[in-house]
Image 1 (cartoon, one colour):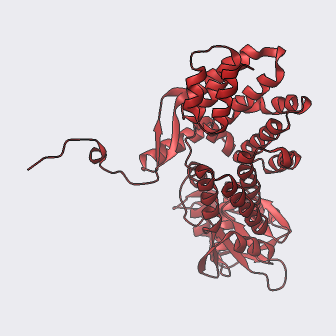
Image 2: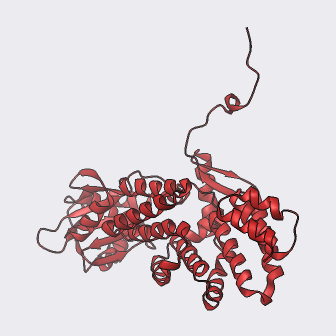
Image 3: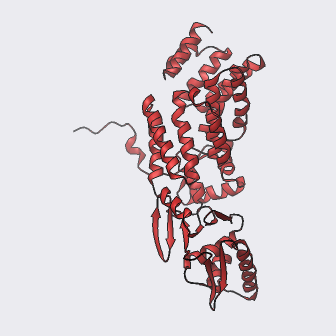
Length: 407
């Protein structure tokens, strides 16, 4: 490595991308291209950074596998920040294996952390946990350690495990304070605020109350039969009945849980499940069929009794009660808004990948959110990105420089 490349690399390590560019900006050799790409990423020009790193990886080729693998890891990190979760992320596992085989423990650990973070974003929690456990934590670069603990916290929070989540957040905060990078400190603080915010709302016996994550964990561990409208599940102790693919059955279960300990009329169930405001005999027949299916699904957890007016949900076990778990604020397309709330700009394809639905479904939902003033987009075609609208509009003309009137 020549002296200019060494000096540029040192500048990047010290957080001085302009200093690095001053040394290698006019060079086209692979090492300089890689350093220029990382410098442009630090300056926020991600498309240019991605192109420079792609050229560097091509130029290194098979003769320099470690350098090429480092470029692939840097491309994957840019893809993660850009919420482009498809093709570049697939190279991470291969790059990590190459780095491990050649003894580059720090970059191999960083690649593992990025892989775990991507898996967490798209909801593959078990795989994210396995990858995170396989990382050599001692080799992880100090700047990556807060993020790794945030991934651990995110996994615990989605699994509704409050104490492990709190412990991981504490370790992330200590790691961020140790390296004193403002962006990382702010990211950890945002995660801590999300942890302390209400996670759900419980409706039981006609009353509702907000729950923190620990409270949700306690409710799910109790003997209460919980109809979970956040994830479309029904819980009772360690038994879980998923109904996310059975929307009619879940609508019936939700209506029955909301009314408990009372019953729900057939007319109300028809409205809730089928939007049928003028029921005929075919609707009543379909309701009997769907109630039979729900009775079979919930058999290990509860009984469904026919009453004079409708149907009643009765949990199994002496003294067991029923609760309905709702999001803190019910919104149409709430899952989409929850992803956009991380403050990053998402592509519609990445949102579809994270939610496990079709791109067309996501596009329709995004257009509805944009029409309702809850989401914004910029760019066109494949470069189009979506963000949540965090603040109301303001008169930008007041922010433009202008000569003030005198006298």
